Amino acid sequence: TVRVFADALPASLPGVVFLSGGMSEAFATNALAAINRDPGRAACPFPLSFSYGRALQQSCRDVWRGKAENYAAAQAALLDRARRNSEATKGISCDDDAATTSLHVAGGNRY
Image 1 (cartoon, rainbow, N blue to C red):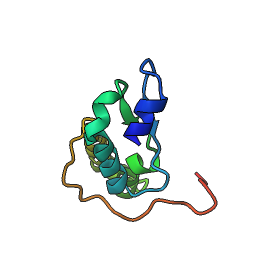
Image 2 (cartoon, rainbow, N blue to C red):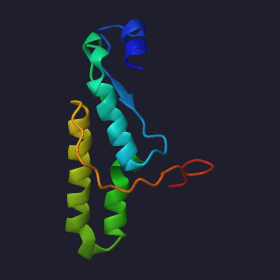
Image 3 (tube, helix red, strand yellow):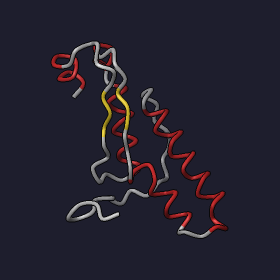
């Protein structure tokens, strides 16, 4: 992936963002970290980052469950997931205890 980006994309590109595509939170975060740790990463002067929906929000939604009393814990879960993905943009992996269940929705999103 990194080699193709370096060969095919202009250095002036503002960045590349990845979607989670139904991957679990842990898998999406680890994939992003692996791409940013790739030895050829230096050949891509632009950011390789994320634009996750479900894989950024799922832990938060699972904690919140629409209940006001869960707001603080849900916010903490969202901040933790955002931190993990931010670190992954630097190639830093962290132990990830997030659910590893696929977040794929058959037939597409129905939010």
